[in-house]
Image 1 (cartoon, rainbow, N blue to C red):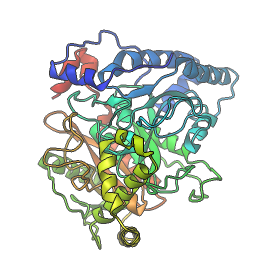
Image 2 (image 1 turned 90 degrees about the horizontal axis):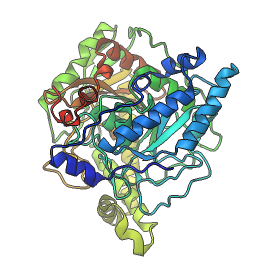
Image 3 (image 1 turned 120 degrees about the vertical axis):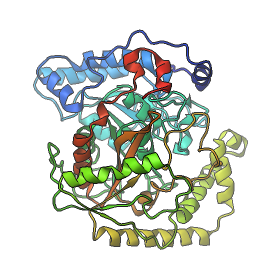
Length: 505
């Protein structure tokens, strides 16, 4: 039986009523916080099996997901069949990879053979698709167990996770707040212990934003690192990547999903090499710290600024040499991004039959209306500007290996809004720190760095040279070792009182 999750009105009504729901039993506690290596070690030693873990996590999803509405498809026979095949391989001593038997959730923008691909859209059918997207195929070949698909706004179009298909997704650290988007379902699932790793995607910050909002590690690989097919023509700077509670787990997942795919014309020929993450020495890395990343910032939060600045001594303690310097952009990155975004939304509207356009997400409709007025000259100008931005970034990174700065200008905000107060849909100008690195194609990551006084998670952004995801993983691990915030989970999971998620200290 396919999973039927509670809709957004149930979540919103529980928040408004002070939430009377209390979860008295939380299955999977013995497995839900284990990392990839801990799980596979247990499989090899027969301390537990992939089937046992899968059963417990399925029960955990059913018990806890109604609180957040992160899961959009859970097919128990499908999951248990994959887990049973993995168990048989371990019993015969023929495990396929470092991820064999590991439960993973997959954002519902990626195709999984045998599961629906709704994309958060009323225009998509509920019938199963026939073919995996390449990164999903690589995980299937590696023996991973596909636990569930996770919520996304329609086509990944928002900084929050809400759609007419799946409803609204809540932040496990505060049920009245958003987990961000568009990989908010993946983030909420990880924060509740629905497996150690999740597949997200990032066209303007959609991995890094929810990772920052939910105390997770999220990595946007460089463009071309993880093969894709078919390529996304609307958002050509969009990539898929790992989200996890620990840096090591994301590195293992990246090693799997970036393996070759001959159909992607932009895929890199070289393979990713896992870096040493036990106690990384950052000596030799030149690191720049910038509180605004050279961008116009209409919103500023002193708590976030202080937490981001606090990363500098951690990196220096690991051997990195840090200097305060910002990129100098030849043009505000928002200008070309806005053109690509509006034209991309217009292409979605134009491809939709006239009698069905009214069911598209209102943000797609409003941005598409702006895109309809854009000319070919506008697109060519934006493309030229994008090249200038990439050239300016490359010049900056000729002197630095890593740039450190904020992910978001504000902490998680109301679940009932698409954007913070004072801003309107579909305005992206309020969150300028993530999409420049989609335009340049460089790898970027969000690393947990602290909590506001109100108990809301904050991440720091690390940006690296093209092809140097390993540098980001090493620096992120150095931060993680010195500030192990991945161990701080939503308090109501321990208190057994979900209303406490609104008053974490």
